[in-house]
Image 1 (cartoon, rainbow, N blue to C red):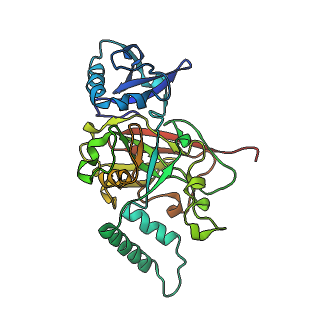
Image 2 (tube, one colour):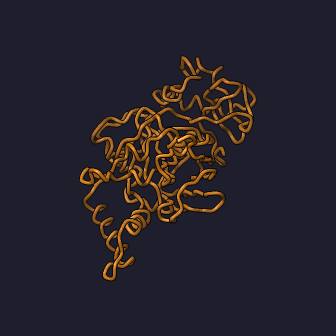
Image 3 (cartoon, rainbow, N blue to C red):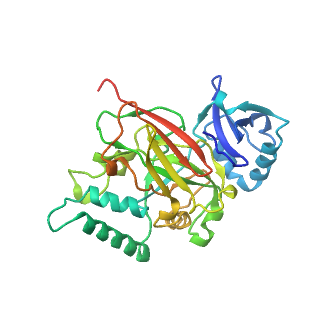
Length: 331
């Protein structure tokens, strides 16, 4: 569950009813509450505690590294003995859509009515050409998510009964540590403090409004149900992710691999997405920037989420999250 071969990461956990921020090293977690004064933090038990650390990231990062390295001091716990919570309660959530080439091509096939003169190969070729054109003269497609949709990396998620078409979307998320406003793509990654895993659950039949098709996508209804953004298990400092465009995302459903793709397939890079979002508004410490989901969603497989399904999501060096879903009862 926790990141392997990563020197340390930041997590939140609960034990005996108490929540706290800690550093994770291997299979152990150091409770940082006794070090609150050292870190300049008033409270390391509240949901906002991680944001507070990110606000002081430049000065806090070396202190966290020192605490992680001092394995003979402090209060260390076995990660398996605590309940890992969402490592962050984000201020703002920026989401990039249609950002993996193969994914967009698959969706084009899934949503196009084929005929004698409109073959799968033609649909794929047209979608690929559209992507190339977008890359040359376009910009990332970015929309807003709700922090209230965030849940932890092991929590069970309830599938709302108003639909039977709920889907998975594994994504790499960048965590902002230094405010960014109108930054360039060349400078954008300097504002990223960490990376983490997100599964951006989506209700497919609510993506487009049937009553007002001219308004386009309705991301509010399709993506923001409670728990529809499993986050974590932890925040891995950006220094341990030398190239965010060289990571492998893998999602399994009940043990079967559904998504398995490299971030190299992104149309717009992490840096380009962060830069694009910053042109409109200021990205703040604790903000999440989601970077799109690769091919292999349920819509492409023709197999959406069902009661009792278990998803396991991994990204190179960022650990693993396990999400079980249950159908909503009583409706």
